Image (cartoon, rainbow, N blue to C red):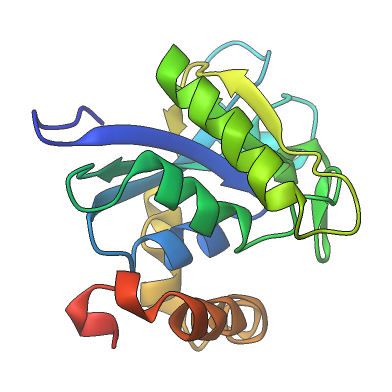
Length: 184
């Protein structure tokens, strides 16, 4: 995905990419989101099945195209960091493995510095240490089409109803001023 001249990119992993996508796409200033894979060592474009095996080293991530005049990278990271458990190493709920790690892939040194500061800042709100990895952007591979816009297309599915819907309810409770008008 290449952003327009007004958009910037953020690449984030916080467990299942369906969850992260569903939360962040509701924010004002978010233009588009692509679910995908990043940070692995295996050659070539990995498949969902390969990433789920844990053998490729990739994380499930989303690549967010956003307008920094509406939502800053810092605010995007704050919301991301409070929408999953950044203290849980290589797992989010029932999803276990390095592919579900908490990770921020920065696109430039400014993003790296902001990420480090946000991790420190939100760390004060958790009893356990933050384990979110902060790494330079590696090659991003878009996930298969059926993973894109997953929650919006499958909100009645069991996983979505039990895991993702509560995250969206929490988002609406804590960040109602940051939501797109269609989300209120």
